Each structure stands twice: as structure tokens, then as C-alpha cells.
Length: 207
Image (cartoon, rainbow, N blue to C red):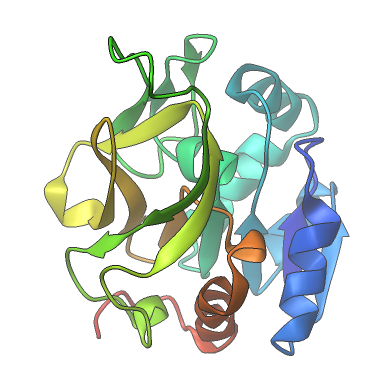
């Protein structure tokens, strides 16, 4: 059973439709017990980390997601879901799930030609291989919408980098968790390729 976590962070139906395109049946649920029982979990989202973390606590999903990770079940974070898996977000000064060591910072540019949020297609450079990146090459483009970016503490948790004003981590992972700052469900066939790889992934990060 694959569960897409509903924590009022939007874009869930788009993720569900993308899953269906690659042959995955996914259930959208806010039920923490169902999340715990899932074989795999997708943790997507758009919006504010501050309100999202509050909702996770209110619904009992915060602990459920930590338990899913600790049980070694495959997890996939998308956009806001890639940020909240870290320890702390500057957006609302929130303590997050802490599944991966690191923090989330806000883009801050003196160059006014660089708009915030960062919106649109951008290249990703792969810095190390991962089972979910088969068929993905450095220079492939994906669709981004974000004002904050992830800063994993351990470089070994970084799988992809993107340039926007400065290089930032756009793909991260640790053990049975993989996450992308970009929107897989809006990134055409390359985004679907990562979702398709997730369908058969057993949670082992070694290629």
C-alpha cells in the first residue's frame, strides 16, 4: 500500500495522478495509523513549513512519519516535503522531522534580477548515483517553485545540485528516504521516471 500524506499542503491530486501514470495506485490519507501501516509513503507539499509542521503535530502525523522512516520503509519527499524532513526550517523558525541532519534557509539575493520564489525549469547536476536516478542525467531539467532551500549537514546526503544565484541542494536522501526540491509531478517524463523507479524501490540507497 502506497500512501500520499495529506497534511493540507496542497498538490496531492496531481501527485496521485502522476503515480497512476507510472502504474502505482496511491491512497491520499491524513490518518496517522494508515500512514504507519503503509508499505511506502510519499510526502509532497506546497506552502508554508510553519503551518505544515503545525498540522503534522495536530494530526499525529509527525510521529507517524518518524516511525515509517525508522521502520526502513521507502519514503519519497517532494518540494515542501523535501524540506520538512530536515531538522529545522527558517520559515517560521520551526523544528522539523529530523530524518536527515541539516536545515532549510531562505534565498536572499542582492541581485534583484533573481526573483524569489525561484519558479520554472532548471537543470540538476547529479553528484552521486542513487537507485531512483536510473535514466536521469546531469543537465536534465525539472520544475521548481520555492523560496527556501535545503542544506544537509552531511555532503553524503546530497544527490543533486542546482544553480540559482548560488548552488543549492535539489536532491537529498539518507537510507530509505529520498527527496527532491523540484516537483516530480510537474517535471514531465524525467519526473515520472523518478516516480516509476520509486514504484520498485526497496529503500536501499546503494546502486
